[in-house]
Length: 422
Image 1 (tube, rainbow, N blue to C red):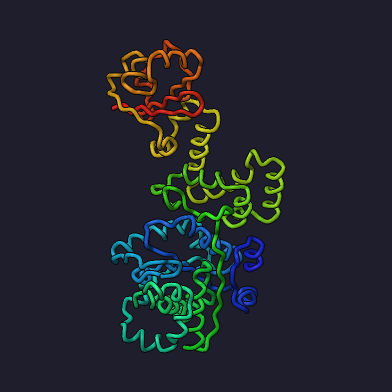
Image 2: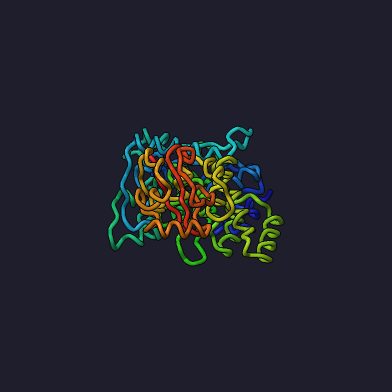
């Protein structure tokens, strides 16, 4: 597989330094991407860079994932309008371990010469003194060169600390150190990293007379101009404790047709022929969302696994397809609550389950305004408990409890209420 050509047809190249493609075609090449360790999980914005490393390894090259234990203490100004809070060493180390565990889901760390490697730049910065750094590294890059970078120019009017100003030099040293010690010849990253990356190639050239290369990916945007990976709740995380598998699956399932045609190239490993066929099939009948389903299933399976994917699909069918009380009871509590997040909740005591159903539906809860309304809707076959239609003679019982404490009541097609029994 030709790495650069693979990225090109997938629309994953924004800038590429002259000579880069020739370097990849000449020999197995080590290349690295830096990951921000300021949280204990990566989010789907990071998936673009993860997929770059996956394609790199599939093409026979060696991926290095740099988790920035040192740069995380400084803070990258690229794309930022203000300085961010810096983290202490203990928190950073915890985040680094979490990020490494996530990367292991995608990359092969035991496949011979091109096994993936996680590196932490704290290892080479820990014992490097400030005086040594400015003497041996700082003298090679001029202030004029650093100020010309967009990440600096955009902040000059509002102010920038020396800490953030120095970031591009710190990242440049990362590339230099990996070039010198790991034979790493290419740095990969998002388009907002171009200035920092070429500082590294320039440092390698000026300090050692060496040659290094760079590739950046385009900033992923939604067709409507919205920010990719953001929802009303914030980032879509790879950790299902931060974003449930159900919500993760729904994010991809709800993408627009135009976005799905773009995302399926970037975020899946499907080949060009298969993707073209999926797009053609989708265009014949857009209503059944073939493309979105293929996208959501592929990514969810790789991030969360087969069992979590099945639960996410089952959970989606509960709201949008045919399902039974057994389907509800098969969901774990986290997925169940994620599906019905935001629906009205009513708390009752377990002893209340002995009451007549109409009393529970009107007095112990306010699901119906009156017994008359409840009776009319039940007679019209428009009320379900745990997805099963009920009649007027229906009785509640502890056998109905989902995860030992929930009962789902549905009025009509879309009005859900959750009874919490304690």
